[in-house]
Image (cartoon, rainbow, N blue to C red; front, top):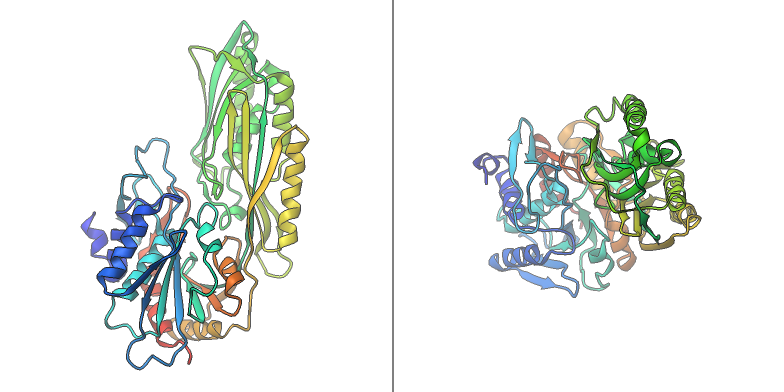
Amino acid sequence: MSQEILNLEPKALWNNFAKLNAVPRPSKKEERVVAFIKDFGKNLGLEVIEDEVQNVIIRKPATAGMENRKPIVLQGHLDMVHQKNADTVFDFENQGIEMYVDGDWVRAKGTTLGADNGLGVAAIMAVLESTTIAHPAIEALFTIDEETGMTGAMNLQGGVLQGRILLNLDTEEDDEIDIGCAGGVDVTAEAEYDEEETPEHSVAYSITVKGLKGGHSGMDIHKGLGNANKIMNRLLFDGFDNFGLQISEIQGGSLRNAIPRESVAKVIIASVYDVAFVFDMQQIVNEIKAELKTTEPNLEIVFEKLKKAPAKVMPPMAQYYFVRSMATATNGVHRMSADFENLVETSNNIAKVNVGNGKLTVQCLTRSSVESAKFDLANDLRSAFELMGCEVEISGSYPGWTPNPESAILDVLVSVYEKQNGDKAKVVACHAGLECGILGANYPDMDMISFGPTIHGAHSPDERASISSSQKFWKFLVEVLANIPV
């Protein structure tokens, strides 16, 4: 671990973040980080509980003079999104994150940083081990699998937590206090098709879309970023009619909650169209690059002739319906909120596309702060893919978090923020999925709020955490703890 990370202030926060980031913690494979956080609590002599799904709760008594304050829950999730650049060699299941300082930012070398939600977890760890921070009775709740289903929060049983106020430390702008978030649902389309032999006199190409920024499919969905799966579909759309193009395979995107940055396809064309194919496709590439020149200046679309054509390809009719269903399927912002200024209400991310060996799968994550709108858009997607013959599964639904502008803890945070910073915090709802809405189902009387340090580029290898913001966040958290009401 770079010494420069360990020397950052506040040391308690960054040192715990460094320790956490040394532990591999992919979603659904959190055994090592669960053991790490349990050992952390036990070594402090605190009560440690692991529930049936591996959520961990660590209890710490109130400091002297704070015993009459409302008990609180400090909450963060242990897992992180695993994304890396195509040219980065990295094993997320066995390696710790390699971090470095870049001006005011901490970054990772070619991978996601894990600041989402590692900085929140590290802050909770720092509070637990502190002997000087004033606070009421604390339950530190570390949930698992937030990034790929929120199953930790969904399976936390009612009656386990004793706290009356929950502070979720999982938002990414330090001047915002979150009081609401979107819910989400997974939409998965699958189909099989009978492959056919590659026609004679064919030429094979690989097509690679890369260099996109990617990002969080909730927090970044409104930024007009390129989606590698939609770009690839645009390149293939009229390919059969124009060049006899047939798809052999496509691999695009990786995780539902990450805007896809890369897609690779292997296709064949009729050899008679070889020169025309390269010329005409370059015109399309130029058009796409011109459209995205501001938001995606590093976009690359590469065509490479293959020495050997694949043996099997998708039949023309199956391909016809596939590319048209992909073109029809909504991607990006579907509707803006009528109740909150500049808030995305409903969106979809066409996150992952796999085609080959007679099977195709399209995975989407649909989000909305309005439950009925969430399922309405999911049904739109379902219709687009069922019309091409897919089996469509709508699953993994989790609720949004309904804003409560009358929250008592909100008043505390607003007051502390203004006192420390001289201006007012933005009280907002966000389009990301936070665990507050899910936890509130079993703890409806718990007052909840969310805040955190500034993190940019979450869910992408461009993820970075602001050092100055972490200092602001830590000072804010410490003062909030000291002002929890009776």
